[in-house]
Amino acid sequence: MKFMKLGSKPDAFQTDGSDARYVLSDLPSDIVIHVDGARFYLHKFPLLSKSSLLQRLIIEASQNGTDEVVIQDIPGGVKTFEICAKFCYGMVVTLNAYNVVAARCAAEYLGMTEDVEKSNLIFKMEVFLNSGIFRSWKDSIIALQTTDALLPWSEELKLVGRCIDSIATKATVNPSNVMWSYTYNRKSASSDEIVEARKSSQAVPKDWWVEDLCELDVDLYRRVMVAVKSRGRVPSDVVGEALKAYAARWLPECCDTLVDDVYSESYKHLLETIVWLLPSDKGSSGISCRFFLKLLKATVLIGAGELLKEELMDRIVLQLHKASVHDLLIPSKPPAQTIYDIQLVQTLIGRYMRHAGVAEDGIFLNNLDQEMFETNVDNESLVALCKLVDRYLAEVASDPNLSVSSFVDLATSMPESARTTHDGLYTAIDIFLKLHPGLPKTEKRKICSLMDVKKLSKGACIHAAQNDRLPLRVVVQVLFFEQLRAAGAASAAPGPNGSMARCMARLAEEEEDDDWKDGRAQQEPPTPGALKKQLGSLKLAAADHGAGDDGRRLVARSSSVANQSSRLSLSSRSRRIFDKLWVGGAKLPGEGPAGGKGSSDTSGSSQSPRSSAKPLESKSSSSSSRNRRYSVS
Image (tube, rainbow, N blue to C red; front, side, top):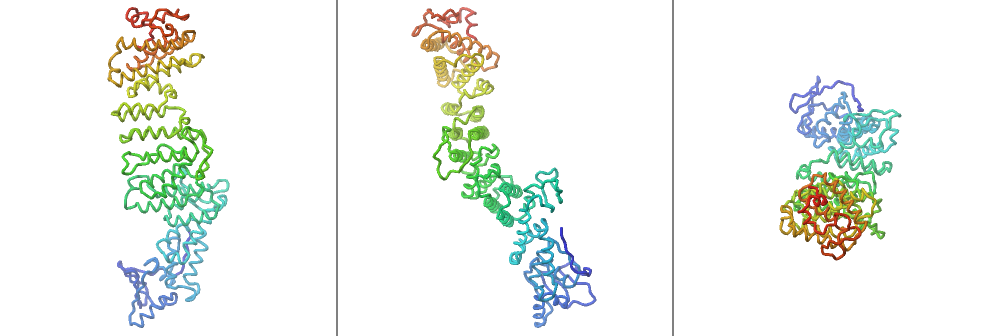
């Protein structure tokens, strides 16, 4: 820190412990000066030779027959008057960045100019400001901080502007030319590291200056940043880093602090200033989406206004796919019933899709509105956003106040083509069903219809097959498609035939009706009559397709999958479903002529012993028949 010593005589000012101050001297004091409640017992001659104001006040006091003078509203108060009084006596005075601005204002107030005496206090302090303070990076910042308490004097004397100009000039120089000390904590091992005059071999970061400015008052910070930006030498990413550091310094992370009425106005002013200082290029990648979402969260909690909220949302939607789930967890405010602001997130997603020119079916549109921004949104960005939405759904699904409609709307806000896997969506659905056990059956079906079981991974299929919270229809579909997937992996044969798919759909509907109508599907085994009815339907559908070698291949695949699945630990409900699947899969392709009613006649492929026309009777009469059912029990 720069400093300057004035005078040569020792400091002779004394105090008696109260508000009285006097000078040790052989001569008695002949004037008493009152400054903000303090009394200075001084001598007229030293004061008259330096200050034009004191000359006038002392003359007026003499004319009124008194030896007391009252000085009101002197900048800096008692301390700065004492500095000026010591200078008049020629005593040693030390000026530095902390007191020079106040002393300069007080000297102006007292009229200590060159007209009164050459090399007066104002002249000496101007020399110190220009040669010392304004040449130092940190001293300029310290001096600027002291100007706020000295308004309007510091503004009228252009001390504020000169400090700002000094700071902005140094902040915009080429980093390779930086030779002064500065603070840089964000990427340092030590939080209080001061980097001193780095060698040329050590690169100075472009944003070396941002932390030192974080100590400024918000209004002064705004003026400094305007001056820095106006020079056009600082890239937008450095401006963003500066705003991010300032927000981290003054904007609390705690939501309870943000909503405190005592500080709400100051936080609102802070947010308005930061948003106003953001780079004009909304599509700039120099500022992260996380920072914008932090500002948006504070804006919502404080209630800073719709204009501020809209400005932030317009910037967020341009890079929403880069956000994280934690960033999107914005607490809601009354009258919303949910813990987090679901509607706000859904609005952001909708704007992202419109700005990207993507319809609900995932098709990129060509006729974008003129108000839309040009973005570099591609399929990868949409997939990333879809995964983010699924993770967000899983996070908010535990909210007991989250409605089914809100869950469905948020899940369907992304085009189906962007959801390459449904594992994340299945996780969210499972959590929602677990935390909302009292859902009506229709709403359970509505939620589960969002999921495509063909896009579940093997691990998710195994979990879903044992999940008692899922409707039986969904479990049937999971088991069926997992069977086909395993069969396809073991064989190069074509995909599943249409008859098998239709039969499985019919079986699922029947099982679902039994489960939802009377609630007995999970507790009671099916009656022989019900199984006959189901197997008769299976045979009729299989007859439409015809018999042949395809039937044997499907039977072989079904047998292989059954052997693999038998090693899985499934619930009793899933085991019963597997029993029916394996029986139906084995009988579909080669059983009976088209339109037959359980005849024992078979086609060319009926040599297989699995083509029995009476499976229920065989089941009760022979153990070999039971082996042919491929039961996983």
